[in-house]
Amino acid sequence: MLQTPLEGNNTGRAPECDKAHACLSGEQGCRCHVVQLVDDAILAVSPPPEMKCTHKMRYRDAFLCTCPVRKETYKRYKI
Image (cartoon, rainbow, N blue to C red; front, side, top):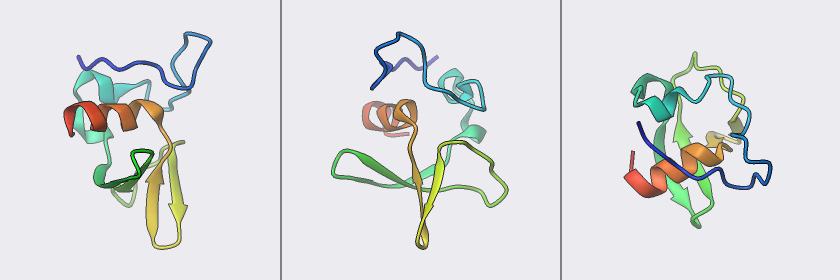
């Protein structure tokens, strides 16, 4: 199981996730492919068209991931 700190969260609880943090279990089907990490802060991703996620945000022709757990997972493990 992958481990990441709970960024931006001073309550000690994980951020809301409609997938129950399945990405931390190693299940790769729940993760969007990362296209680029911009300024060490913004994840540009390529999600499957049918993927529903509370952290997927459309910006023009791109998608961004706002999940702090996903961002930290990518930064640490490059996955």
